[in-house]
Length: 302
Ligand code: NDP
Image 1 (tube, rainbow, N blue to C red):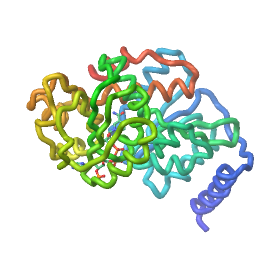
Image 2: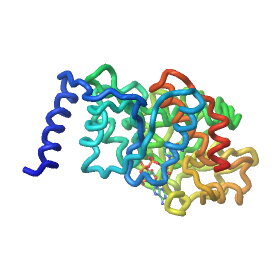
Image 3: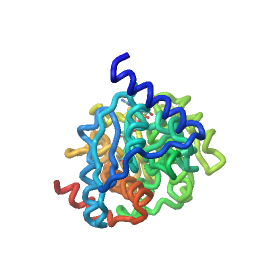
């Protein structure tokens, strides 16, 4: 057995203790407190920049790093991080579902989302999983962008993890209806059935007759990241429609360009959601909510 294999084996044993009820003590407690974001790839992540500004603004002694970890090493890395005194992790693609499976306990919103973007230790032996994406979108829409969701007819494009994570927070804002349209229609229908007890929603494919005249359209597909837009038409829009792409970039995303060229009222991209979900994670970890407006400004200006 190599040293690496021995290390892995010993940590898998400790992971088993964490996953069960055994107590595991942190082997190191040192200031500043350790945080980070784990994903694959992760080089593009703005989270260290955002959390660095939050920490400076609220005078928290913490460091926040990027961890590029492939799926096969995810569990081992997370356990190692927490065993060595790490305090919290943000989790991004492709690990959000694996993080939900690894956590000992999920918050109700993470349980509903079936995905975790925030991990933290509770006591010395429990990893808690939370999901702040939905709260981030709701805050960005309502507080930053002044979009009053109550009574709106909403279209969500996509039925993946991000769509799932925002459904409950959006339904809590009392829209008149949410239609979920997805490339794989069965996935949209199944998501709609699952969340039906929380509000008025329906799932369909992109060719559905239901797809017209929405007040708010949220692109929760990953098409923008592939330089594409879903196969949608201008019939979705009316003169007051707000379009929101969860994806974000230095240039306008393909969905934002589509929305503007088809006459929407406003087209927004997901920078605000990114900052707001980070602020929610930060306040869970540190017990203090940072001001998001200056951080969003700095991010856009950087
Ligand atoms: P998933 O991989 O879980 O889901 C991807 C979704 O996109 C599926 O519904 C898939 O359809 C659909 N899709 C993929 N490619 C295409 C295409 N070419 N045309 C039409 N539909 C397509 O990803 P997530 O849900 O986790 O993420 C979705 C987006 O949201 C990403 O761009 C991500 O960056 C963004 N996001 C932004 C956040 C923020 O803070 N701003 C936070 C979280 C996510 P099918 O089911 O048919 O495969």
